[in-house]
Picture 1 (cartoon, rainbow, N blue to C red):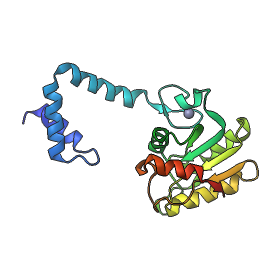
Picture 2: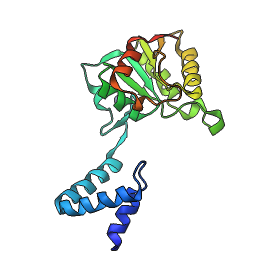
Picture 3: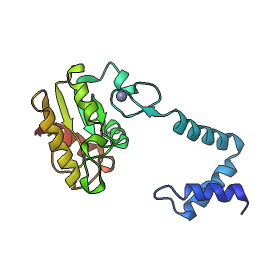
Picture 4: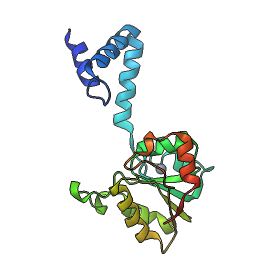
Amino acid sequence: LNEPLDEVIKLLARLPGVGRRTATRHAYTILRRGEAYGLELAEAVSRLVRETKLCERCHNHAAEALCRTCTDTKRDARRVCVVQTPPDVSAIESSGAWDGVFHVLHGVIAPLDGIGPGDLKIHELIGRIGAEPIEEVVLATGASVEGEATALYISRLLSDSVAVTRLARGLPAGSDLEHMDAPTLARAFEGRAAL
Ligand SMILES: [Zn+2]
């Protein structure tokens, strides 16, 4: 193996679900497609890591100060769906189950891992209530022990000032939203209930 090829294989193999064999196949494919594709890929990855920031309002990934969801006037800004991670937003968006806006916590409260409320975007969520015309907060953290505890914590903070609901049960315990199919997600939103 020449050096650049080896380097690309090594880096690709660090992605989840990509073993050395798949990484090798992808590296050769990139090489075979030619220079234009390889440079386009390299530039896209470079822009992804250099230009992606967090939306000032919902803290999802964004290319500008505000993300596309937050600037979309067709979204129902009265309803906010609170999720753990940016991939959860992607999963919900591709399911088409939600036309409100989002708030990304960037994790859940996990005392055993040393993650407390102050490490998450909870303070920022409280700041949005009152500053925005929010009427309902839908808690869509995972069904894990930490996800449930985080939902309960936020519910106690907000339930005096806004309607707080939780996605319907039926999600497998500990599962991430990103692994749920669209019909299941749609049912979870339709069946959301007061917490
Ligand atoms: Zn946003």
